[in-house]
Image (cartoon, rainbow, N blue to C red; front, side, top):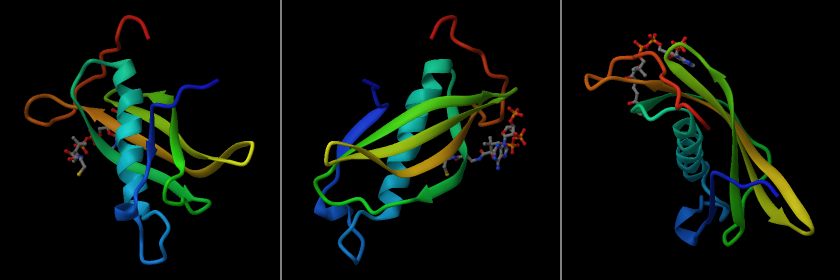
Length: 122
Ligand SMILES: CC(C)(COP(=O)(O)OP(=O)(O)OC[C@H]1O[C@@H](n2cnc3c(N)ncnc32)[C@H](O)[C@@H]1OP(=O)(O)O)[C@@H](O)C(=O)NCCC(=O)NCCS
């Protein structure tokens, strides 16, 4: 069984005016989950530069178990790009509700991009 980067249960405070989960809440968790994946690659400090291709395929409901699965798509000169798949348990299986691509940039103490230094082992 796959291990997600993070898994959460969302609450009534996380809903929109229709009573389903607010997309901005999922974006926040997406960003954190992607950062967990990026941190598997490097010990450097990094910041989020872009959340791309975020697709909200299905609504998420209060109380559902929401899993954020991640994989590293690309390691560039200063950036690490991660795919995040968001799935909820429904019925006998998991349904993909959201997917996104998140890019992080390694930065120095002044916040300027620096080359990615990979961890020796993942
Ligand atoms: C991230 C930041 C340091 C990048 O600075 P920059 O001068 O634009 O950097 P560069 O143009 O040299 O690009 C750095 C890397 O980011 C990538 N990048 C820049 N813009 C990107 C975008 N829109 N989408 C994907 N990657 C992007 C570049 O391709 C490059 O990657 P590479 O070196 O692996 O090829 C700067 O934009 C910043 O500080 N942004 C705010 C970050 C932040 O505060 N995030 C928290 C949320 S607000």
